Image (cartoon, rainbow, N blue to C red; front, side):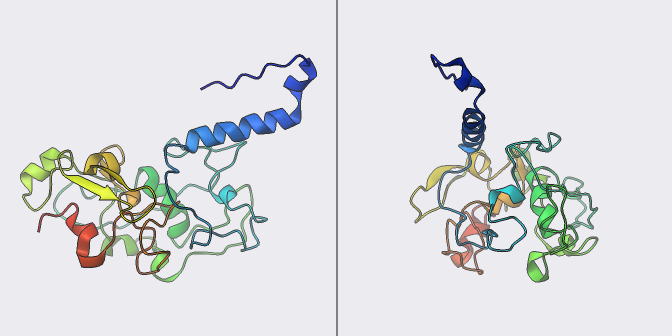
Length: 233
């Protein structure tokens, strides 16, 4: 979409106020497809009071200007991208033995326990994710659910304990103001791959009311519902 502003005063078209308004509108348009429910305010991802971002919560990950154009899976990226190598969850399936890709790399750029949370915009004062929230390089990812793996009809056909993601209908955000219903492929996968975003929504606590027991989950883990969404057990 191109924003056009007509004015009898040509000076208005060069106004810095108009430029800022247009930039802000562009950011909203780019993000409109992901901001569908809930809010980061008051959640564990609300870092506006931490002191290293001048109260600007969004700037840790996004910036309206001078963004990292090498990052294409998220708009106007601002944070230092992941550069670590992981010892991943291992099986004999080569499809699973893969390093993080896509938006999982963006999550791990804070949650790897090595890259500083405030490593953005040329600054870094070294606050790191610790405990269960931080994954240690060459260690932690091996004991976590594999990410960046292809999950498609072919995989489901080989493994009857998996639902066909193109057929199985699910609902995310049940109980929230804006639940969504569709297939696993449509609502949980990113370019056909399982990523951090398959289970978690970085911008919204859709279940659990910011409970640490259900961090940013798209589907409740009560009764193992989130597991049984994909696993046919």
